[in-house]
Amino acid sequence: MFKNLFFIILLISLCFKTYSQEETEAFTPKDWTISSYLFSQPYVYQNNNFPTLFTGLSVKRYFGPIGLRLGYERIVNKGVLNYQGDSLSVTSEENFLTENAFRIGTEYRHTYYDIISFHLFLDYIINPFDGKYDMFNINQEKLVEANIDGLSQGVILGMGFDWILTEYLSLGLETRVDFLNNKHDLSIVNHEKGYSVNYIETTSDIQLKLLGNLTLNYHF
View 1 (cartoon, helix red, strand yellow):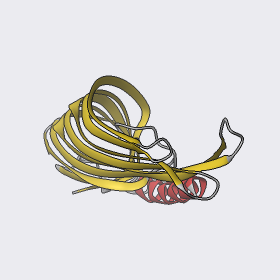
View 2 (cartoon, helix red, strand yellow):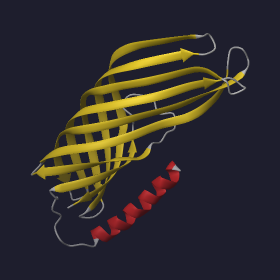
View 3 (cartoon, rainbow, N blue to C red):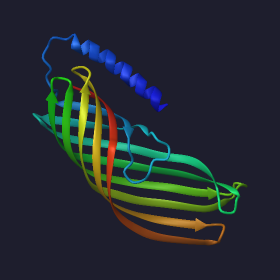
View 4 (cartoon, rainbow, N blue to C red):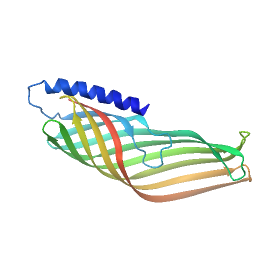
């Protein structure tokens, strides 16, 4: 699926680029940009069903080379994994994890040769997240269930490149470093051993995401 999407985007971009090269008017950067996230890396958890596609929208307003950024991403991670346990009985686990990331920040933009637009950005993120994790035995009897409800917030520092297709369209790629503080409530019920536990956990994390976001951008 991801390969097909990549080739479709590449074909569209080549067509638009051919059209734009035929234009003779000077390129003028637009003041507004609306972006659709074609791909997003999660902020809190590891993504088991890579890639996560079509995750959100963002809007930017530029005042010369300086812009204001506002974006929202909903990233869903779900899947079933079969594995061989210590008891040699086959079990399965199901997870369903969601993040709702709101980002606001500022960026510096510079365009080179009407082809590449370079960005440096700094965002603040607030990201409520929740999840559910269940483990089953070979008879599909639930052994363990866990529920998580938390909030992640912090600062995102990064850079991006927009490949200019036409005066109005571009493809964007962002690399980012996340400086996050995560706090969540976790409840676990072990049906197999007959006990439950609830606790609060707080962590701090720094993560480098080389392919942080891939966007299709409309400029006006």
